Length: 145
Image (cartoon, rainbow, N blue to C red; front, side, top):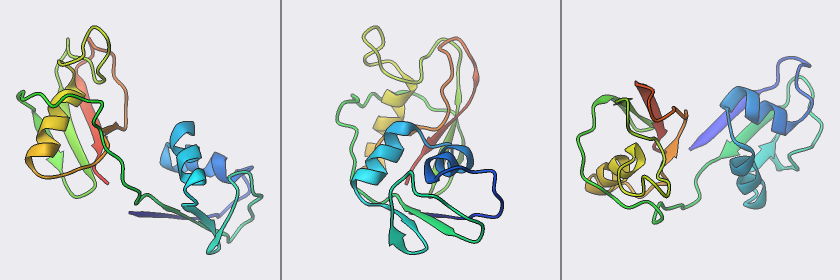
């Protein structure tokens, strides 16, 4: 998957700032993209601290192989609200955590999503886009690309 952003004003100080603000990327993902040389500015691989100017074209290639072998797939009912090639939106019930933890190693929403991804042959990293507290009931978004 390729993400493209054309710099259209001077509000951003760096590529990192654009990636965090426009694409809500975590620092961890940005560093992984940098390490794998997946960030270009005007078609050239650049540092994440590279200066930017109006008219520059920032492209990010999220196409490296990742897996979620650290998440145990567990069959559970998922209330899928929406799904396409890029995302899965699940209505998260209160009382279930989004991420596995020591206390919730096999009963998190991510465990159910891992099982679902495995069942449809999708070998992608389980990447929740938003983090909700265990007791919060809301739509939870997962990246599929």
